[in-house]
Amino acid sequence: MTAAAEHPARAFCRALNVRYPLVQGGMTFGSDARLVAAVSEAGALGTLGTFHYRTHDKVKEQVDLIRQATARPFSVNVPFFEQSFALVERLAREDGVKVFTLGGWFSEPMQRLKEELGLTVLVSVNAPTVARMVAERPYDALIVQGNESGGANSHYGTEQLFELVRPIARPGAPVLWAGGQWDGGDLLRALVRGAAGVQLGTRFFFAEESPLHPSIKAQVLDSNLKRPLTTALTPVNDTLSMRFITNKAYKTALKEGEVEKIFQDKERVFALSQAFFEENARPLLIYAGTGVYKLRAIQPCRAIVDEVVREYNDLAARRLPEL
Ligand SMILES: Cc1cc2nc3c(=O)[nH]c(=O)nc-3n(C[C@H](O)[C@H](O)[C@H](O)COP(=O)(O)O)c2cc1C
Image 1 (cartoon, rainbow, N blue to C red):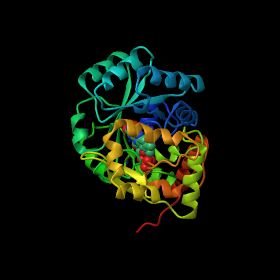
Image 2 (cartoon, rainbow, N blue to C red; image 1 turned 90 degrees about the vertical axis):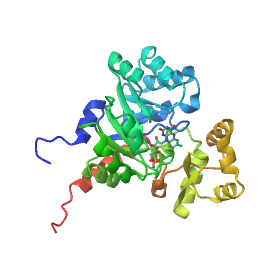
Image 3 (cartoon, rainbow, N blue to C red; image 1 turned 45 degrees about the vertical axis):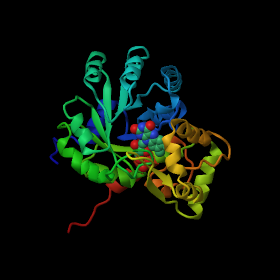
Image 4 (cartoon, helix red, strand yellow; image 1 turned 60 degrees about the vertical axis):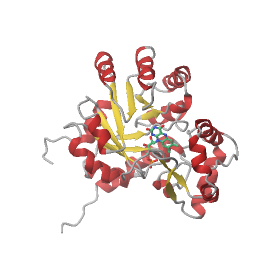
């Protein structure tokens, strides 16, 4: 890279007005206002998940809470559903939300709304075909979500997806990695390979400020400290696969066909989420990315962000032998 060429991480930080090229991914029920505000206050980009809140009013409540807690930028994640554009439009027009992470879509009306209101739009993609579908749209960044992730559905691994998507991404547009990213070493690898940053989900899912009940966080941490946790990408229906911790409850649920049954019924998916908020509820399935084996402590978001940055800086300062 020549001295004049700017690293995409810098372009990303400037475009989003964040200190670090680090994003907390939207996690339906797992990223509420408290978590988002804590991440944004720490210099990364917090992202509110919306699926769990069901209505505009409930999402707006969270947006108001974020604003009360921080003046830093944050994003709102809106996955692709029938009413997605209507929700974005209300949040943008009525509530002044400026940054959106669109889960696999960027329609023509959305482009007009972005241009009219000066919105910042990140698009997360789980396949090259999705990147191609949005190729002509003026997105500000792409996030490739690979199947190491705790909540994204993809046939591709993160680095593989990056290699496939980069040639078809809009020239100059920052592309971030999501899926299996955890620490400063992961950030360094992403930036060396030409990505603009990383998005972390699972690490923040188990952060101190996340809405998960502390007893659930303690349970996962204790298990991991005893024996490193493993995860499995699990088909839950014909089109969707999710990654879960392979504990005893998971193995039983899988054997009894319970996993597929849960995901056939939206209300049962919501009920599964609800179990994460209750003391010692022991959710049947625990969403987690491959990086969960690195969980060593339940940390506040600021400590997570500072640690990732410190590790990155330490590693980036190393001189490798010339071969
Ligand atoms: C519990 C959970 C729920 C998630 N929900 C969503 C979601 O609603 N929309 C979305 O685009 N991504 C969702 N994700 C994916 C995250 O935004 C992020 O891209 C991913 O977790 C990154 O991989 P990692 O978990 O290995 O860090 C979710 C992830 C988790 C762990």
